[in-house]
Structure formats: structure tokens, C-alpha cells
Image (cartoon, rainbow, N blue to C red; front, side, top):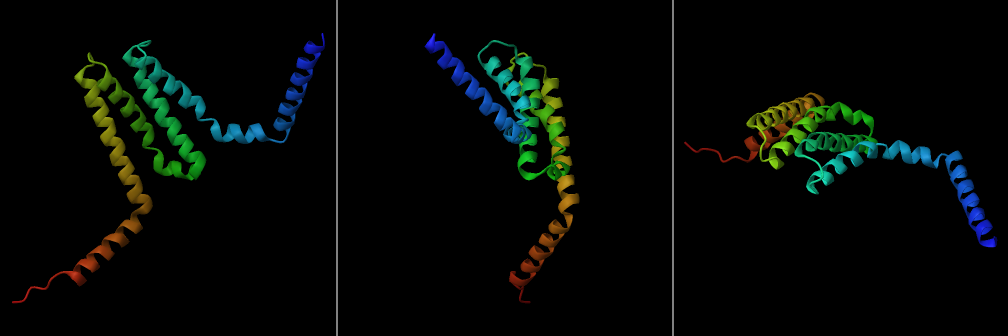
Amino acid sequence: MARNSYSIGILLIGLAVLLLLGKIGVFQVLLSFFWPLVLLIPGLLFHFMFFNRSLPAGVLVPGGILTTYAVMFFFCNIFGWGSMSYLWPGFILGVAIGLYELHLFDRGSDRGVLIGAMVLGIISTVFFGLTLLIKLGIYVIALILVLAGLLMIFRKRNVW
């Protein structure tokens, strides 16, 4: 009987500690930062179950999408959600990655899967480039002007 009350006492103390940690906001801080795990864990589980031959190759598409989105959301949690103005083409890239994984690991996949993955990947890359050019355009123009100036200063002069 004493052993049972000892275990219940430890359980009650543990519950009290959890309640106090919740009251001071520890769990809120952890959940506000680690919520992308809700996407990352299923994405990685889809990959794990495919490579353990438990599920068919079709699960690689949602696995690639969820994993890509989770990485983007972790990036935004670390560097701020303003970076989503640069990262939004990653939503297209996530689908491209999922389709490419399907093509890569499914021997019976149609060639259209690869074409779709490549088209979406190119579109995503173009949008990433345009977004960076629009957001950082003045810096790119300044860099080009500096490089052109240095080229003009240090190039060999032709002697006629």
C-alpha cells in the first residue's frame, strides 16, 4: 500500500509541475515555435513507411509536400514571417518535390509525372528569381554597376 501511495504522490507532483509550466507559458512558447512538427512528422512518416515497404510510392507525393512546407514554416518561425514574401514559391516547389520523388522511386511511374515535376520546379524557380529581383532589385542593380565599374577600371587597355 505504501508503494502505491508513493507512485500516486509522484504522479500528483508531476501533474502540478505540468500545470505550473503551462500557467507560466512554457508550453505556449514551445508550441508556437514547434507547431510545424505537425506537418513534418507525417511527411517523414510517409517517407519512412515507403522505404520500409509498408506503403506504395504514391505516399511520397504528400510526404514531399508536407516536409517541404514544414521546412518553410520552420524557416519563417526562426527568421520571421515577413520572409514568406520571399518563400511563397516554395508552395509550388513542394508539389514539384513530391512528384519528383514519386518519379524517382516508382519504377512504373508515367513520364508525365517527371514532366509535371520539372514544369512546376521551373515555375517555382522563376518565381523565386522574380521575387528576389523585385524585392532585392536595387541591390542587384548596384552590384551590376559596381562590377561594371571595376571591369572598366581594371581591364587591359588596347594600345593602338
